[in-house]
Image (cartoon, rainbow, N blue to C red; front, top):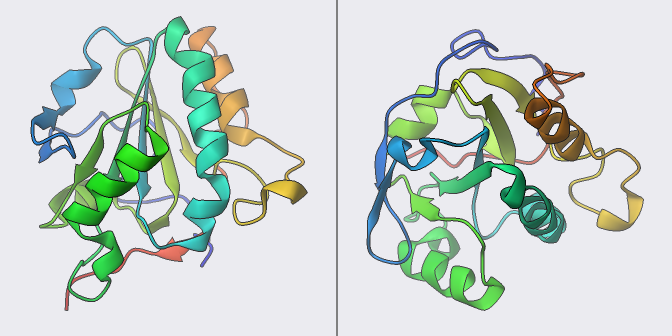
Length: 184
């Protein structure tokens, strides 16, 4: 699916919502995790989506590149694990260990946090500046499913501009991926 337009419920300029979710390490992580960050990245993701699988190595590389400059990142899975067992918390824990994810991987079982962000698909990225104001919303690149076809790295550009105190351009790109699997 492609998100056709920017969110009206959670537009650019919105403040980072408050949340507190279980991390794969067994501890909870809240929005306070971002205190002191120069840029805050929230990605809605999951285990089974081919778009996530196609872009995850790039995301890890981007996070490692910018974390020393003040970027803090979290990933959130909000998919219904009853319909999609691969997205269950135990499978999230196994993935985090196997991939050595350099960021917390949080479970939004109630889907309340995804609704706060008006998230629609996986992967979908929300970048906030140091004052925790949404400055970029969209996709990681122009080919999230097939890394060999990537020609534009939107997320790295947005992060670099944000860390330099600039507003990202573009500030919105169409998120492309699997739809969030909402509970029935």
